[in-house]
Image (cartoon, rainbow, N blue to C red; front, side, top):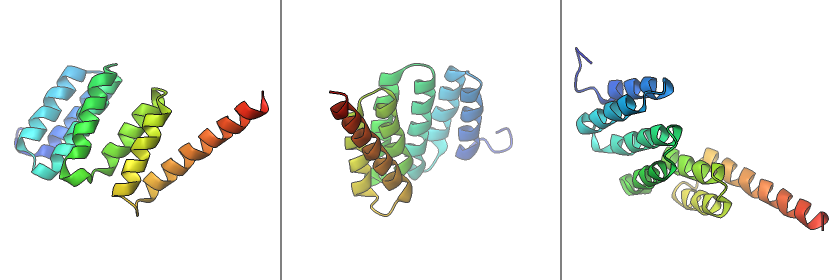
Length: 137
């Protein structure tokens, strides 16, 4: 950064190093600095990175809010943000929200294999749970 202080990718990488080290305030600062000097299309990636740091630090509501912001940018074309938001809902046990988020993502990215694969996996898991629940009655 000393030689390239306006390189948004370096700020993103630094933020990830801080986040993985558990230095969430420093990660937030690096990601915020990257947002300031990055191009408009990169904003959604920085919001997702900030959401990851918030989630890792235990601030689920902030993570959810940041991910929702990330998927509203670029006409909703941020597949990583959609997947992260669906996975957050899944991890928090709000399966109906996870399913709805996967559906929204599929609507935006009909050709994206990763999203379709995750959506199919989630549907299959829920069907298995329903069958198990019905058979145990």
